[in-house]
Image (cartoon, rainbow, N blue to C red; front, side, top):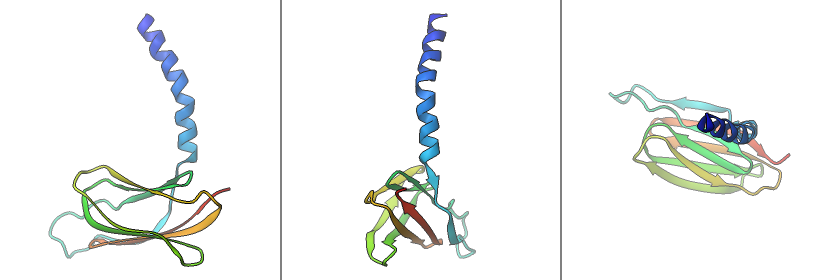
Length: 123
């Protein structure tokens, strides 16, 4: 009985934090093409792009090599550019952005295709 109470208290303490985190995490809608008939294997799942406060994250469910990420502001200035690789599934690549209110565009390109999304940081 005591262990049940401890688990219940821990759950009640952590549950509100989980709700707040879920409310702030926002998927970035993307357009583009991912996957084609050039490969003989199954194309990997397209990356998920989401924003939590001023941290933009690119989640790769499947391992990917040479994924190019470019983030630019509304004036066209490149604020982040990198080519990343993951050898393991479930990798998340964080990109720390300025916390000043700003509009951004992200472009992800790879052998399998490209994705483009627009998002804002700040209120």
